[in-house]
Image 1 (cartoon, rainbow, N blue to C red):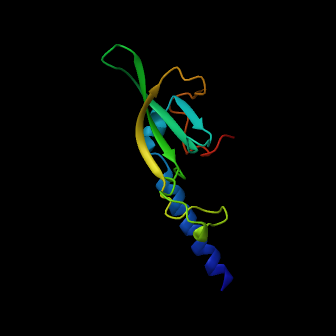
Image 2 (cartoon, rainbow, N blue to C red; image 1 turned 120 degrees about the horizontal axis):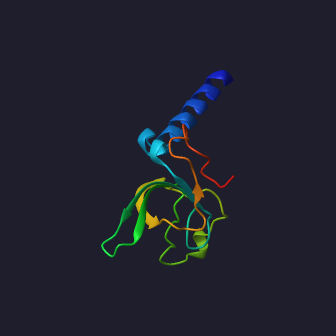
Length: 126
């Protein structure tokens, strides 16, 4: 019986990882990676930088495929001490996957040789 539970758990984990993986065409075009570490204002994320363009002012802007596995949750409108809970997994945390524009000269960007990524990188800074 335990074997079945492990197989089911592994299939669920594999499906979750596949859902968070960037498309193959994004991986092939990626030339930079940018990890954001969780702070009070920002959630952990990984951005696959894959395109350079210029905005209307002529500045270089990059497009990135960003994955935020656990987005920050809004604070409750009113604190109720009777419902206080210990820290733990946040309820209703759906991963956020979006295409964003960011600075191409970000000092935290790790260069990548385009076409070298064949699979997703770890979502947290190695």
